[in-house]
Image 1 (cartoon, rainbow, N blue to C red):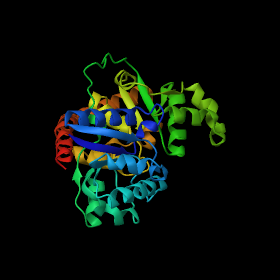
Image 2 (image 1 turned 180 degrees about the vertical axis):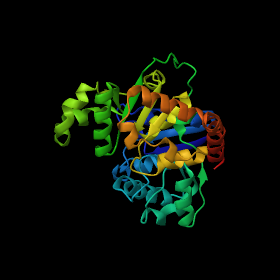
Image 3 (image 1 turned 60 degrees about the horizontal axis):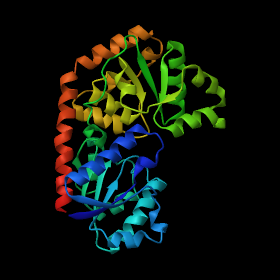
Amino acid sequence: MVKAIILNDTSREDGHLGCALVMDNIHKLCAKHNIEVVSSIKRTDVYLDNDYENILDRTDIVIVNGEGSMHDDQDVALNLIKSLKIAKKKNKKMFLINTVWQNNNILNDYLHFFEKIYVRESLSQKEVIAAGFDAEVVPDLSLYTDISDVKTNVKKDNIQIIDSIIKKHTNDLSNLALRLRAKFYCMGHGAVKLYELHHKYRKYRLRLKGCGLQNINELNDIAKHEAMLSGRFHAVCIAMKLKTPFLFIGSNTHKIEGLLSDVGVDYNDYLITSKTYNSSKSEIIEFVKSNYSKNEEKFDKYVNSAIHKIENMFSEIARG
């Protein structure tokens, strides 16, 4: 049995359903493919821990979960590289999975650390290739989730609006939720707390409370809606898995645009626009549903193929 350490365990994000699904699936897939997880570490600056080298000595491979990290040479990613330098000195095989790759200069110099690079969408693949390395596209691990127990009793005239990591987008979306009397959801308890308490959000805190601010705690929180408007990548992934029609607004990377391009649709057709903000609830729901249905077969094909690609990825990792 191959022994592994997982770095960047994003289950540290309190109440973030997308991260929870990703990490649950990583552990399930490791077990299925005879990969023993010796340690799954939430801190990205684990190189500072005295016990880190001892853990590495008990492992064969390092699996790096790249979600939310590998873009714009941000500190969380640079901390991971410092941790990987220690693993490199110990000649550990390293695999980068489930990752975006965008706007990196410093990080590009360390792509050679990895035995294999698995990006979530083809826009990230292009950036890795431009840096002189190979990368395989394997869809986000949230798409591996078993949905057999999810209830699909959709409530009529029910639209869901989800926050964004970008403040202005969240402000605009929450205003729309209030106007439509639609429920406003966050991806993560941390986001809920931020909107309720942080001084930057005083100006529209009452508006957020007025539209029923709440966290997405389970898949049923998405499945019960006729349509979704989202600023979150994982919410779009889950919507595709559950066949929930959606529109999106861009996030802090090209991840949603890349995802939809890989589905084989024009992502511009699924963007939230000024027209969306000025339409009635019934008009939005009708448009979102009809717009989704035009390419429903493509979405289904992408989701189904994701399972096979994810399985193959872990088979390759297990073989080292």
